[in-house]
Amino acid sequence: MAKTIIVKQIASPARRPDVQRQTLIGLGLNRIGRTRELEDTPSVRGMVNAIPHLVKIIEERG
Image 1 (cartoon, rainbow, N blue to C red):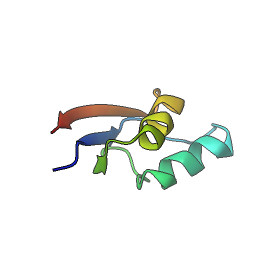
Image 2 (cartoon, rainbow, N blue to C red):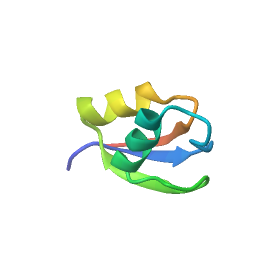
Image 3 (cartoon, one colour):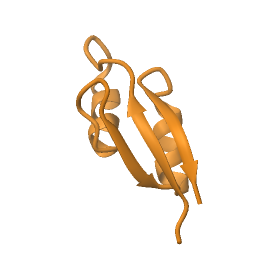
Image 4 (cartoon, rainbow, N blue to C red):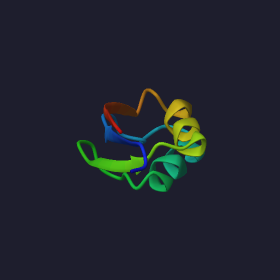
């Protein structure tokens, strides 16, 4: 089974650069409090690390 991470959006992208909003959309998030289970790949990790003030890794599985 592939490793996954659960990511939660903890802040709004309002008044932030558009690239940060697009990164949230790329992760499948668009509202505060939403969570997504994503495959733990370098590209997903890079997206999460690019916006640490907007998202939080809740759990790592696998």
